[in-house]
Image 1: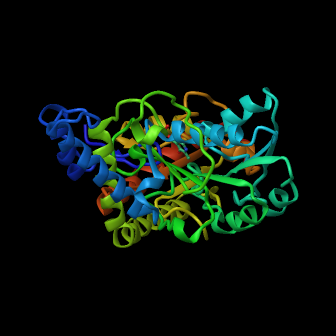
Image 2: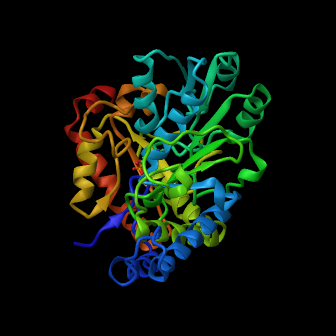
Length: 387
Ligand code: PLP
């Protein structure tokens, strides 16, 4: 079956260049990078290279990069490190639209001795900065705000927030899992203390991530074990995947300008044509300030899951809300936090493109989707009532 994959915020295809670079490290150069022998050293130097490549993508120093097993581990490590380093501070802040990797940890902490502030967003998914600033206190241990939202694609003002937090001496973590590789990031010019990223969102492999920890930031490891990662993350390195992540970072840096302009053009075409051809369709989120690859469109009075199933028959892969919440029929917490009305939230579909999408694929979706929505609306009592 030919697949038209526009679900790249859920996961991405591993780039062929990434695969190629990883393969020898499964069964040819399979040494342990910690070993003293030359064979192990042949692996060690590739990990050094991966760290340098990733650091370059982020405007960081290689020693500020810690490899982890995924974005979720990076988020957990950062947040736990901040609270362990500030044991007297019992207040923590995040936004209401974080990925479950942050949201669910904050909810856990709220039941275990922490006072949590969830900063709201407006109808366009923009963060309420005044609310954030008003809630900063002497006892705030950490603020964790995502760089870009995985569902709406809305980008948050990380540089601005960082400046305020730096002045107050509050640890600032950002979940940049969706931002890295899609928009330029230069950590030298921001006051971010810790940043999480994940390999499988930028054409690297699954099961590998990284945490940036600014030099001088108080840190304690989450995975306590061996001396790997300078004692900051125990466990034998996932060698091939780390090498793949490094390569993916290098490719992302090279593609950041040209390819993302092409992706944005395709995204804009898809969005404009769907809005034009399908009545009662609305974009969720701030169209002025979004990731170049993402559009979340609400098709009112139809069920998102039904749309997904019918698109699936044509091999079109998209997502209703976030991939992690599909399987449940509740509208996503992100759309609810944005105040998207029930009839629109239920029919919201996220299209997230990548550098591998073609104009023909976009044209195919533009052709197939309007009749799908029309057919579903014929069956919808809500649609009939609204006419
Ligand atoms: N944070 C965001 C914003 C995400 O979109 C995701 C994955 O969807 C994660 C964290 C979790 O990353 P991982 O799947 O690598 O654990």
